[in-house]
Image (cartoon, rainbow, N blue to C red; front, side):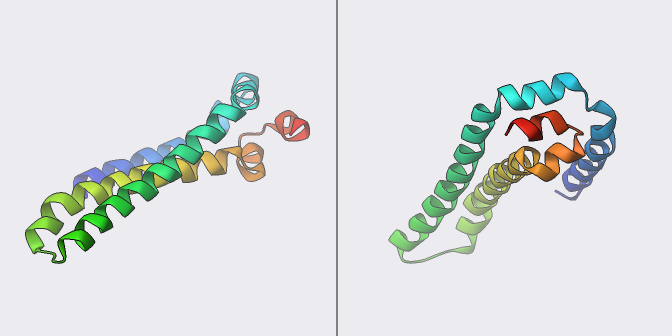
Length: 113
């Protein structure tokens, strides 16, 4: 798990460092044309994360008891799924915001929204 988190952090830092260099007119046009799709994906990611946590909690509530084995076996996968879906929603929200567009240097997209 620790190695995975280190690799994930390195990938995030590399993406953040490379993003301004990769920003071009094509990326800005993609963001403008696919805004509806990105909004839908963002919403579905947040809803999916909510359903994962709600299903996990309901499973424990309906049983009436929680064992440590349940938390180890089922809880880790559910938590990873929640974090991934929530993270996707946060990243899409940021990229579609004015701050994300300014970071990508897409001033023409900001003017048209």
